Length: 407
Image (cartoon, rainbow, N blue to C red; front, side, top):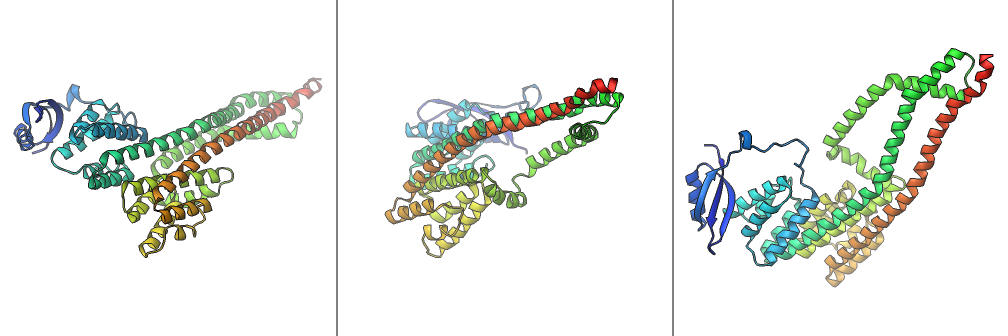
C-alpha cells in the first residue's frame, strides 16, 4: 500500500499540544507509531495533496534552498536547543516558522525521521542535496561529543560569513555587469536599426564611403543575418552551462584557468583559500577527525586545484607527516597560510589559527573587490564611450561630403 500523508495533533509528556505531519500506510499505522513514542493522539486525519488543495509548484520559483536559508535554520535551531528545547520540539517549531516552503518541507521530513529514532545527522544525510557535507559531519561530531548547540552555532557562523562574502562580491560586480550588458545591447541595436538607415541614404547618394564607415556598414550587414543564429547559440550555451557547469570534466579545465586569469585570478585564489581555511577550522573545532575534515573541505573549497591539494595533504597526513609540510608543496597556498598552520599544529590551536587566516583572507577579498570595482567602472566607461563614439563618428563622416555628392 502506498504511503499517505497524515496530519496529527498529540499531547506530549508535559501535556502540551504538538502538531505535525507523518507519512504512513494508514491512519492506524500513524496511531501505533505515535503510541510507540509515548504520545497521546488527539486527532489524526489524511492531508489532501491533490486537487484544489495541492500546492502549485512553478519550476525554478521558490524551490531552491539557499545558503542563507541554511544559516538562518542553523542559528534558530542552535538558539532553541541552547534554551532547553528538545531537538524534536525545535524541529517542529522550525518547520512551522521557516519562510522557505522547500526548506520547511525538508525539515518536516527530517523531523519525521528523528521521531522514529533516527540520529539527527543521519536524517540530514538523507537530504545531501540540501545539507552540505560540512554541516552533516559537524552535526555528527556534535551529537557524539554532546555539544550539538555549539556545533550549530559554528555552522551558522560559517554559513553567514560565506553568505556575507558572496553578497559583497555580487553587489560589487552588479554595476559593471549591467553596464556591459547595456553597452552590448546598444551596440547591437545601432548595428541592426540605425546603421542600415544611414547605409541606404549613402547608397542612394553614390560616391565612395570613408573606410571607417565601410567597416561599420559591413558589420551591420553581417549582424543582420547572424543576429538570430547568435541569439540561439547564446541561449543554447546558457542552458548547457547551467546544466553542466559543475561537471568534473568542465571544472578540470575551468578551475585551474580561473586562478591564472589576469586581475581576477588572485581574487579567485584568495576566495578559495578563505573558504578552505574557514571550513577546515570549523570542522577541527567541532571535533571532526582531521583526515575526514580534509576530504570534506577540499570538496567545499569550490576549486579543484584546492581539492587536489587537500587530497594530497590527506595522504601525507595518513602516512604520519605533519599538515603544514605537505601543504607547502602546493603553490596555491600562500606561505603565510602554511606558516600559521604550522604554528597552530605546534601550539595545539590549529582551529584558532585557521579562523584567523580565514578572517584575514575574507578582508583581503572584500578589499580587492572594492579595488577592482573602482578600477573597472572608469575603464568600462572609457571603453564603452570609445566604441559608441567611434560608431557615431563613422556614421557622420560621409555627411561632410553629402553636399558635394548632391551637386
